[in-house]
Length: 84
Image (cartoon, rainbow, N blue to C red):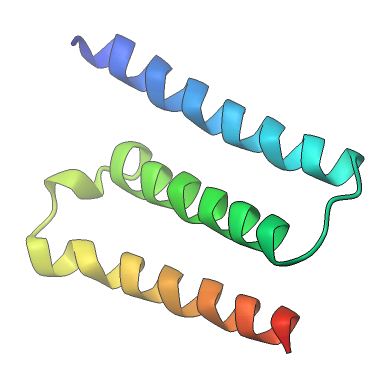
Protein backbone atom coordinates (compact mmCIF):
# COMPACT_ATOMS: atom_id res chain seq x y z
CA UNK A 1 0.00 0.00 0.00
CA UNK A 2 1.41 3.37 -0.95
CA UNK A 3 1.90 6.06 1.68
CA UNK A 4 -0.83 8.22 0.14
CA UNK A 5 -3.36 5.38 0.27
CA UNK A 6 -2.35 4.54 3.84
CA UNK A 7 -2.79 8.14 4.99
CA UNK A 8 -6.17 8.37 3.25
CA UNK A 9 -7.26 5.09 4.87
CA UNK A 10 -6.23 6.32 8.34
CA UNK A 11 -7.98 9.64 7.69
CA UNK A 12 -11.16 7.78 6.65
CA UNK A 13 -11.11 5.73 9.86
CA UNK A 14 -10.74 8.93 11.89
CA UNK A 15 -13.71 10.48 10.09
CA UNK A 16 -15.86 7.37 10.58
CA UNK A 17 -15.11 7.24 14.30
CA UNK A 18 -15.90 10.94 14.61
CA UNK A 19 -19.22 10.48 12.83
CA UNK A 20 -20.08 7.56 15.14
CA UNK A 21 -19.57 9.85 18.14
CA UNK A 22 -21.64 12.59 16.54
CA UNK A 23 -24.52 10.22 15.79
CA UNK A 24 -24.46 8.90 19.33
CA UNK A 25 -24.68 12.45 20.64
CA UNK A 26 -27.50 13.39 18.29
CA UNK A 27 -29.50 10.36 19.40
CA UNK A 28 -28.93 11.20 23.05
CA UNK A 29 -27.26 7.91 23.86
CA UNK A 30 -25.88 7.60 27.37
CA UNK A 31 -24.90 4.94 29.84
CA UNK A 32 -22.10 2.47 30.16
CA UNK A 33 -22.29 1.20 26.57
CA UNK A 34 -22.13 4.72 25.13
CA UNK A 35 -19.23 5.59 27.43
CA UNK A 36 -17.37 2.45 26.40
CA UNK A 37 -17.90 3.12 22.70
CA UNK A 38 -16.86 6.78 22.92
CA UNK A 39 -13.77 6.15 25.03
CA UNK A 40 -12.74 3.26 22.78
CA UNK A 41 -13.15 5.48 19.74
CA UNK A 42 -11.07 8.16 21.45
CA UNK A 43 -8.34 5.62 22.21
CA UNK A 44 -8.27 4.34 18.63
CA UNK A 45 -8.31 7.84 17.14
CA UNK A 46 -5.55 9.03 19.46
CA UNK A 47 -3.36 6.04 18.72
CA UNK A 48 -3.81 6.52 14.97
CA UNK A 49 -2.89 10.20 15.20
CA UNK A 50 0.11 9.48 17.41
CA UNK A 51 1.35 6.63 15.23
CA UNK A 52 0.72 7.94 11.74
CA UNK A 53 0.56 11.71 11.90
CA UNK A 54 3.10 12.29 14.66
CA UNK A 55 5.43 9.63 13.20
CA UNK A 56 5.77 7.72 16.48
CA UNK A 57 5.69 4.41 14.62
CA UNK A 58 9.35 5.04 13.77
CA UNK A 59 10.34 5.89 17.35
CA UNK A 60 12.15 3.69 19.85
CA UNK A 61 9.88 1.03 21.39
CA UNK A 62 10.16 2.56 24.86
CA UNK A 63 9.19 5.97 23.55
CA UNK A 64 6.15 4.53 21.79
CA UNK A 65 4.68 3.40 25.09
CA UNK A 66 4.83 6.81 26.79
CA UNK A 67 1.85 8.40 24.97
CA UNK A 68 -0.08 5.12 25.05
CA UNK A 69 0.25 4.74 28.82
CA UNK A 70 -0.59 8.41 29.35
CA UNK A 71 -3.65 8.06 27.14
CA UNK A 72 -4.84 4.95 28.96
CA UNK A 73 -4.43 6.70 32.32
CA UNK A 74 -6.39 9.76 31.19
CA UNK A 75 -9.19 7.74 29.60
CA UNK A 76 -9.38 5.50 32.67
CA UNK A 77 -9.63 8.54 34.92
CA UNK A 78 -12.44 9.93 32.75
CA UNK A 79 -14.29 6.61 32.81
CA UNK A 80 -13.96 6.35 36.61
CA UNK A 81 -15.06 9.95 37.15
CA UNK A 82 -18.12 9.58 34.94
CA UNK A 83 -19.10 6.14 36.24
CA UNK A 84 -18.83 7.20 39.90
